[in-house]
Length: 637
Image (cartoon, rainbow, N blue to C red; front, side, top):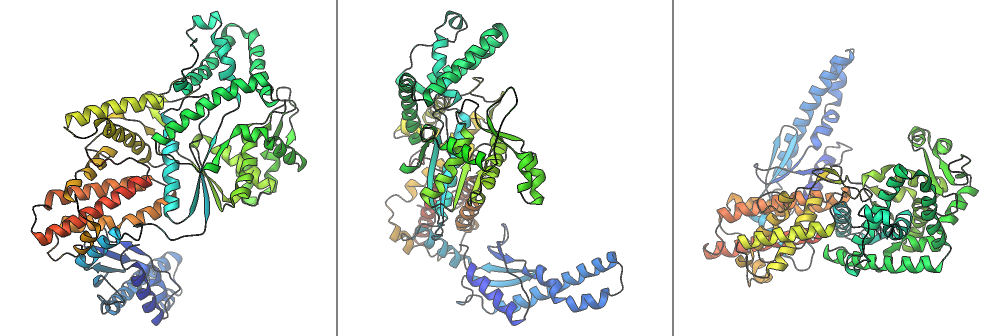
């Protein structure tokens, strides 16, 4: 909460009530640097026309529309300025009292009313609140809401690549921020452990042993248990290449090969022992590797919220959902030669079941198949059943799906079907989309094989971070520090760009110690360790009230620390971790200015204690920020 926020709002409302002016709800905004520290409100802009209502009526009577608009705007402006001046005069008398604590002066500026802080009192308050051991600085009070955040939904039998990291990074950060805002959050992941990609990987091992495929360079030996994702991902990709090769060279075999893929999936659904055994072993190896990677990336999921496509498949939830949609007339059987027997939803036909303003948008959704002609279910069919299961099982108020923007149409279709189905919580399911990660050469695709795996990126980043730490003469556990730098650098690069922007991953920029990157923030934090070494929080709290004239850099750092709660709140509301990333960069920059301008250990005793307390507050906020973003923060660099 901003300093004196509630008191200032209460005082403004009281003065407006005395004048019987309204209705209007005042809103406070920070006064931006380099101007003095404080808050401002533009409520008088809103009320200017109310104040001048009688004069506007009198002076615009009989005028044409253009002239009436001009005079109304002019008189409203003057009315707002008059009201701001009178409010400022009335509220000025309350400055420094319990009614307006921390406020040193109140001034009118045009139609704004500005409340300027007593910087010493405000700085003391900021440090005290930040270091208070009984509270989590910036966290919200309990809301009573239960929110599920589903993220990091990789497919087994495919390698985990750079693009997956953005999903994982954004999802964990959103979950942490929503939880910090006071909600009960369930962190979920939905693993695609069965489907067409699995049949391609499994059947692909047979293709790989054929002489013609070996000649093409597709063949690999049996998988190393430590590299299951890489092996099965290769099998998946090479099967796609093999299908393309067949289409070009042996078209007559194409139909047979596709039938083999579909046949394996059908045998799996029919509980064929061989198919299940092949699948179980490979699937478990992939999931074990996922869990190692998740731990390394500081991803956390609730035990009950590991959902598997295979489990949904075995319960026949997808088929049950499809049959119910068919019975309700929402889905119908496809009669076209190519897809005869499949079940699909035609949004053109169903658009009339939506409110008139939405019907045009719904018609554009086209068609969605929800059951194959052979009776096997699709990912979307299971998604529909799982959505209902989540709300029933966990008593949710909201379900957030963190999924790339390329799935926007898919989620529009799924959510529309949920509404048609009569699912009461359809409006409480939200798709949080983000743009993809690309290499300088272009988009990544696991189908085409043009990917950089997570392991490749991590190992390269660790090697580069190891070089940097050695060059800088950083002591301590070099390997641990290099890994912390590398992981934070990769994830911060995924988070610092807003979700609606594509990322062109720049390796050098991500590992920069001088730019807008995690190593710069980590280094700013690490250099504070010696400044506060051995300092107990209670001692710092006792020294938090400044007795000297504050340097501009001290005030600027306190102002920036004070913005942390508002930043977290806004980031949670907008589901936008980039706001926290940008804030932490500004915070680190403010600390660098303070570190340059204000000696700490060599300062006079009274100043030294205060500056150590301010430094400890900076460390506290930087640590909280890194925790919310799920980034490692080494003590030494």
